[in-house]
Amino acid sequence: MSTYKITFSSLNHAWANDAQLSESGQDAGDSANPYTDATYTVTLTLDGSQVAQADVDGSTTLSFDADLSTGDHVLVATCSTGTDGVCVDKFEVGSNEAVPSRYKYNEVTSGGSDLLRWKLCEPWTTSDENGTHNVWWAQIKEGGSFLLNSKSYRPPLLAGNEMYFNLTKHSNNVLSLTDAYPGDTNAVTYDSTETTKYYLVAKPSSISGTIDPNSAEGFDSSTNYDGSSAADPDTIDSSSAQYIGPGQYDENLVWHNDSIDDSSDTSDRVVILSQTEWSRAWIIKTWADSNSLTTITVT
Image (cartoon, helix red, strand yellow):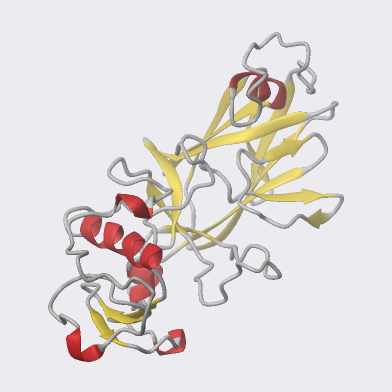
């Protein structure tokens, strides 16, 4: 049996105490607060059965114990009727704050193999640059229809709506998110090659969920490609990890060839198109050399 905990805050409380939501609302008594100072009753149901209920006036954590069978499960939060509602702050399993990761997804969830791209992706994903509020993945149902999940910060559960946490327990007891999260497929920045599946890990303290590629260090940048000409294979130091230019790189981030066709990515080759992309991958590689994620497993 595993213990699950979800923390909610009233929108009034969140607006008054979170500068990312309102720089002007840091005084809890601020008359400009657009949300009603009210108490809301939040109810959790797991696969159709109520498992927890509590009043949220400020911030409140709802907790329940459950034995999950292998397969898909639906955890739904509802909020009592009223003017506004609550937002979700934290999702915990046991003593760990659970955050989503797509790092080596196939290997972790099923013992399968992954493209090198997914061995060099961010170890965990958050919508909060400070890494404090990390539950962006809840699905909101409004008026009978699900809204587009845009990985929003502290997503709100308005009175009368439903918030879904769709979870899958794998045969190895790993807990993943049932839904795929492609984002806005019509956006200019949409990348169809990205994996859209996540599993849950204990929030790591050794690496941020929002990686700054400018912090990459520990490699020889003296011959990095400056964009002024095509990379010359005859002058490339094939033994050093460095950004030479757009092309295919190996697992040590050494330039391999000038192919930019990412459909040819393999478990030990990845197409990288920019210094920023290479630097982000380097940070993750060097982190992984001496660190690992703690996968959330449940009974």
